[in-house]
Length: 90
Image (cartoon, rainbow, N blue to C red; front, side, top):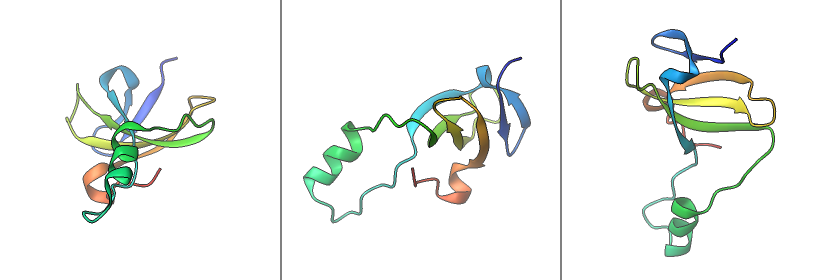
């Protein structure tokens, strides 16, 4: 059975309708130094377990979502609209 993503707008949809875009990290403040921005833009952890990522519902509502999934088991535990919940914390 295909993995289903619980889109808050379209309901449960196959993962093939989505494009994964990367970690949902908290953005540095405007006064953050160059090192903080370099880390935010270029460095990523490779965690095992619970993780939050930005996904785009490319073949559906075209909304950005923050999807919570387990990187070890690939189980999706939830999704929220990125604009509604600020998304940002990993």
